[in-house]
Length: 382
Image 1: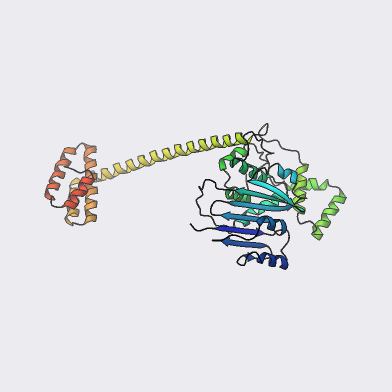
Image 2 (image 1 turned 180 degrees about the vertical axis):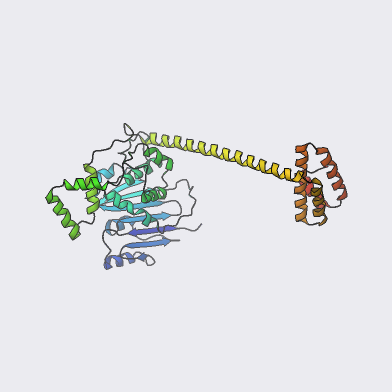
């Protein structure tokens, strides 16, 4: 298999300047570079740039994919919309890490196929576009992405079994399309995600409009004036996200279905139990399907034999006609018809008659070795 590496960077909050695009061009002569993106695919060699530095200086999102199993998603947000202390509770290992760069906080989620079990059929084009909406949710206070990063650490066995889970966000059981794309990209175990979702409140992720209007009505007039000014002047590109995060922070905390934080080991054990139960159900369903198919095939076989029993002499005549052609394909058809006649004889208690007629047929065609070989293989010996 040839080498495959895919790099994609996206600028969201502001476009790249002409000078910045020229700086990026010095790193790669083959990359597709625009005011908002940098995309390059490598089938040999390596990218000369440092993705970490590019994220710190130019971009807001980055996706990396290699056919030896490495997958990486990196997002950058201003620190005033993403609290570093909150992120630190979830990003606790190699699979989920974070760092600050100037006014920004950068989150990196990583997956490595250490066992080499990946079945390679993935193309990087279009993946980041399906994932990047999670950045808006993260800025608005949706912590599901961060929690999934913590799960990735647990799945990669980077955490001690007794490591307690961080606060479980609501809505883990109802991931939207972009979060689902993240889970698939990072190969998060669906059973582990399901086990985690058992401790997640089912509160709607998007706040009801009526509740938002009521909350806005209670804001001080001076704050409303400042919000309107930012909206009109474009002074805060994350205004909506910042307000939604503030709204969520002001709401009473909904208790999860668990009474206490679970540990990484408990979640992994729960995922193993779910997997075993799912596999048991699949095996049982497969057995039910097998039995149903066998019964259906047996019933069809009996109907076929019933039709054959109506005129057995015609069936024997058809056998003789097929053999007379001396064609291999007709031999096969004749043998199958003889098998049917044998089974019919066994079902109706006429085995002796069938064996006599078969012996006569073999004697008549004793000089046809190809036919006799087919009869022997089908168990039609005299």
